[in-house]
Length: 461
Image 1 (tube, rainbow, N blue to C red):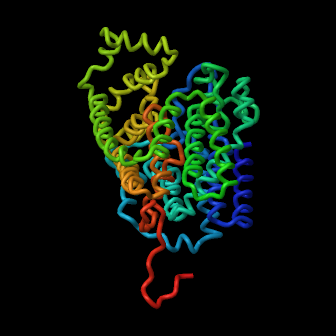
Image 2: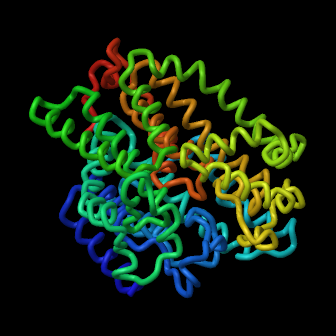
Image 3: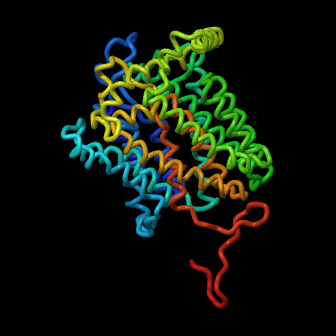
């Protein structure tokens, strides 16, 4: 069934590129694949009442190879090369490409340093290239100016409206589309019950992904609405789309995604929001690095503080009273895996299942990545995302419109990844756009001005 669906989507992708302009077809194929393809071939998932900790997010190599995390970008890239090869001929190297290139290649030297790896170094590098490298290249080629950003945001937001029927059916009844079509989903029941009703999952790896995806689509629609370039009728349309997507996000009751969405929306809509973020975020990033270093090193005895102090008891009581015990639980899973991470901290274990001896795994993406690829792998990917994000903040504070969109989306997805075992796919698109974005001049109101031509020269065709 899985293979048939992937083949059918490949045929649909070819048809879209033949009938729709390439700078729209690329997003229909890529974002549509991430939305509508099954997340992975979850054979023999085991007892659905037992949390299958051994299944990790599709962004990292594991023993689940047939996954839309890399098949959707691969299909989009292949179709683009076939029907839009002239664009690929213009691909140029940018220094900001270096970190993501090092991240994708790191498993090869890592396997030589460690001695054994599972999957092999070459296989892991190929997987990372498909999941992270291809979306980065696609963003370089197809997110170069404001019009490109508008097309991307429109497809992202409008395609996400296809989730509305599932949001109603799964949110009200707990019925699951994946179970109906493909059989048991390993995380179908993890966090399904919310304050009211159930959290939908659709065809994502986890219900948390559904919540943050809806939040990202809301930001894309809000950016189109706040940009002010559309006609009155179009602005009414984007107001309705934004309201509907916001309702879906709130109904998902993914608290972390909602809180980050509110901060990102304030950055977009409050005057001076990006100028303030440009001052605040470097200090926040430094504080997070310090806390993360203390957390990983074990210098601060977090388990002792949490379990044997009055402050720890008070914190647990507070989360219990709020009905939000997932955060202490996630921190607890991190603490179980820290001794294993510390054994191979620099180079990583080069094994996808490095956490197995703990009979658990970290629930945050950074620690999952750290255990598999070490400080080197974590540093490469963090540098790629951080370089793009802070470049966006600078340009957004000056009024550049596309950077406003990319900054808030990257902030949303990267922030959510701190507590969830995935960095959702559009994050790498918004990061990769920095490598291809033209440095257009800005007018006083933040609009892009066309480049000046030398006297007597005709415009390029």
